[in-house]
Length: 623
Image 1 (tube, helix red, strand yellow):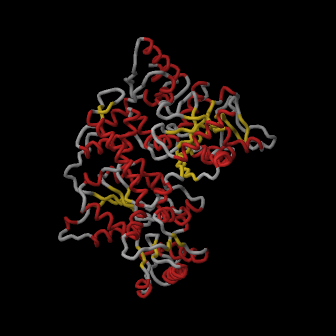
Image 2 (cartoon, one colour):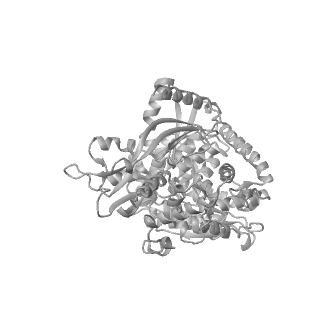
Image 3 (tube, one colour):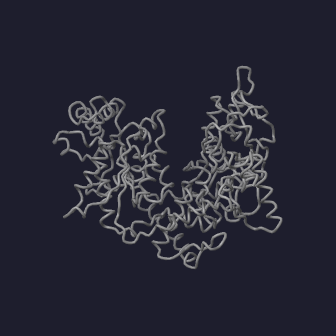
């Protein structure tokens, strides 16, 4: 009771130190009595889950989360529901209205009731996407995610975003919602592929942010087509046509903006463009000469997206369109972990969203796949059978996609490596050079992600190898038979601070006053490892939260700026430490051992991955 209601308890705002120690002692007492699982009976205790669970050897249930999951899972009946399209609007406002007009105009309807149900969140306060991609503008990901979550809560079955540049952020958002975002860029490329006359060279007129993000480049190149973009002067014309004082975002659709857009189109045609994508949803609003429109196909992504949404609503039932590869991968991850919380973490989604996706998959299959009466959860007989089906289906889909895109000859040449953001930046290049010294030229596709996302990619077969941190204090993967690993290098997680003019650390862990603290998000791997250090050394009361981020590079930059103390992998700040711009504060008690490990799936084989694995084993033997 003291840990909850006492002066240093949870209700007084304390989430560490004495109250954590008291809860640990209570858990230890229960374990001595023979408890194999601990269920909190007070709603305040789950607040301490992230700090408490790593310190006790038996499962500690998050009763708040379980109750929320139970409540959210009870209104998911979908039979008989009419398809509802969610629209993330305001990016920009005129383009949203234009998209809705196209959906209505393109729908074959004999009466009002034949039109699509739409729920629109018109949110022009979402930060400018281009400003973020090419400058220092505010990141729009969180406002976009919040808008998508509101659309999902309003009963949308799918989401359309009538903004090309916004699609550079879709990959960050999709994992956190349980309904699909209809990809406008994919729809455009499918439209090009369906043309009677084959197209090899595609012109792209878009914001500088869209061009810089290469979202169109990547998907067009994957389909075997070349992307042509304007030179600097003509790109400036495009930006003026969109953002200028006489541009379309200022309400103009003719005059100066028309002349500048026409000049950019002529420039692409001179380069050999066979079709031109008007890759900003405001560009189709600008008036152009009829002769120019007749001379070249000017593709309107907003119209193509509208047609895709209509087709989805009118020609497929909700069950037919609902099943996604994501849901199959969710199910397979849960089948391995047998724990909803852990599986949701690995899939980089919230647990309520993850639970909804599993429920939706069960509705689609028409059978209960997960036995929730067990702890840890198990598979029902139907689940055991469907596990094999899901594995086979994902394998066939991936191979089929590679064949359709003409990638099959490259499968054995290119190794896919999922890596944590920090290792992708600070370790991969040097390691790749070492491997090439031994093996010759190696083609690799590096996919940076959070550790949980990397683990998910490994489990689901979306990568051949995984580069991730691992600490004996907090194992990344516990099934070392199915997911063996090699230690490539050992280092430490260390607390660092910027220095003053005399080269002394600005902040200290021995100070009598609370020091500013730059921390990881609590659900990230390094965040959980740092929490173990703070709890072990009772440091929570000595630190004053400043801001949090899941990426080490952001915390490193904050530390360099003198914003506070940050725990970062020592290798990631090696240059700054050697140059005297940062100093390690505290001593060995305040650090944690950290191994850079290469993981693989024992049941998956890939020729290049096998060569890399053997080379790493040889290098390990020489150390």
